[in-house]
Image 1 (spheres, rainbow, N blue to C red):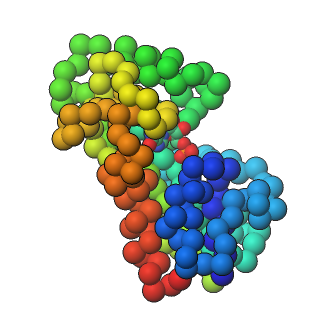
Image 2 (image 1 turned 30 degrees about the vertical axis):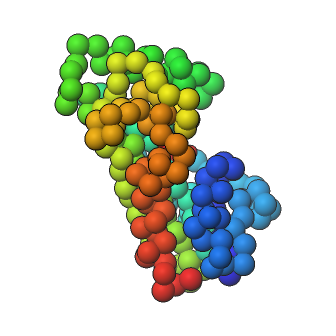
Length: 196
Ligand code: IMP
């Protein structure tokens, strides 16, 4: 059995291979599987988007298909940027600009008023049509500055009070242990234990 992961992102596929690689014949990206379709991520939640992607690809192949959707949710901004995290202020705008903009929008807010979370939803569709889903979060606050060199995207403004560090200051293994994506992947692994 093969797993096709509906992403072009090399880092994501590496994480999936590390978790599921031993149990299946191959873990492929859509491109590697020769599937070239445009998927409109028009869901209003992370889970909807993950399911839209997984179902669209599953309709084109006879493998296990997994997809994920993730983003940053800021409470004081009514959940923005949310499912628009990658598109916030435009896909081509640098994360430095996006991050500075979010810090500015939270001016005057302190402590708990800056609460935020990263969310990751993962959906798996089996060749027989069965569906499995998982959604996990990493809780924190939007910091007052950008800090750290690791990670990507909004990691430099995501402060983890429990650790006294920004997400971009975590080593990759450290982040994987506590991150929304790491937790959702391990939960999916657990759910698929008896299936794979
Ligand atoms: P997608 O899940 O590939 O659609 O991307 C979601 C977007 O959410 C990314 O482009 C980032 O902007 C943001 N995001 C999701 N997870 C993380 C993370 O772990 N760190 C920083 N930004 C993230």
